[in-house]
Length: 338
Image (cartoon, rainbow, N blue to C red):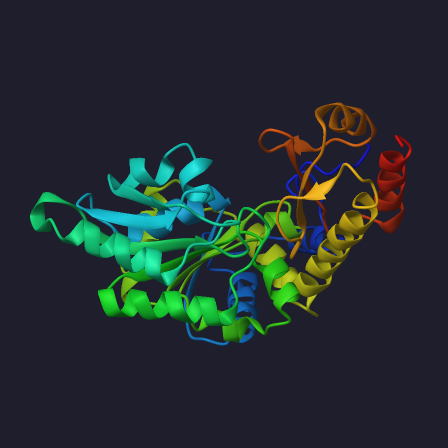
């Protein structure tokens, strides 16, 4: 089957992960997370993230984001997030449906919002007292839906506003490994600013499975019940845990993300040699957004598929298994038109 640049969701399973699944498929073990693989995965993740935390495995990212909100919000509360946030734009209103909470969306620049915007939104909402909602959660994506990332100083500034206002900070980390590699940042440094983390897996080589990580202990209260009620308690938990254990063994998360990021940079370098192809925003991780004439895009989609992302704006995503040859052949195809 041909590979393409539609999404890192479309890639296969990292060989190390597939091996771990096969190894886990031996004999019988306790169910619902009572197995040794789950304990070992927890220990590896905690050691990597560098903070004491509670870890809960779920099937997918929408569940992780939705249950993160459900764990801390009532219907009288609200969520502040960028207007491009996946939790708002591409999850079928799951968080709003689960919590009854209002979304307060802020105009983002290349996917990012600022402490000033967050503070202003909080003050505007709380000005009306009981006539409005209570902002309780700031949710951002790292890296953003546009492939950019928040620097440590930007994260620290957002976290400071959260602490001043009594809000919690949730990070959708479906591609957090790509951000960590791009930032050349140890996970522990980034995680010091996070209260609740949706820790990705599928986009970085897993067959399925994500984790919800609570650094704020009170936020995790009752989550064992919420996960079950939210249809996310996997009886054969070891098949998620085994994948997470493999991902956090010998820095596989870093190796896979590094490959994806390098291929995105290489793809950008090759495509930008065409005079009609331009960057829409900086390429910092494994997502590339470019503008080009529709006719050129249509021709290139026949070579290797990718998605439109607005008028003459297109998204291309590289994966852990994207190769230099695939990137170079695609870039060469673009240059054949002039």
